[in-house]
Image (cartoon, rainbow, N blue to C red):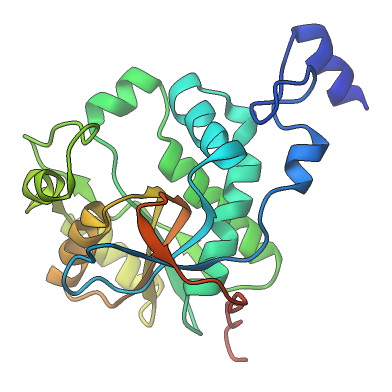
Length: 239
């Protein structure tokens, strides 16, 4: 109740429906999807591991992602992390799992004043650990110079722009190998579009010998085939 009163006094509005109050009202929060489903791009980049998404990139989910990324509405980080956690739970294999956020361009991080993809990935890991899962988040990928903004590019142009654009620094890799020697890896992103970004992240991780099992996203655009079915829970370590 105190949070709702504060939001009202500060003039906050729900990003989903516009009603005065919280950034995400109770009605819109209750309408968010539960579970996750495979979301294969059409066409699918060759060799892409299974991609999973919790929501379609429209409605409240789209407004939430844009609100956090472009408007710096940090209060949306928790519910978005909850959606990503659902995708991870459906996508990840048994045993130790490392969530690797797709890296943002340094210029974008500076302009926004935060790194929303890492924030949401870390939040999803915290949420899942509280439920007993053996999961952690790690910033393993960096972008190379020359990467341009993907907005407005078609699938072929995205693939060209991203080819060879990511790298995995050895220092972070060695530290992680010592901490979690048997880990498998899940690539995490806010929105799955053509799959080119996820495929490049997968290539960069596999190039240094890491086993990538899946891609997990908060939402997927509608330009893809989404298989509707029951979600597959993340297996707890040892079970």
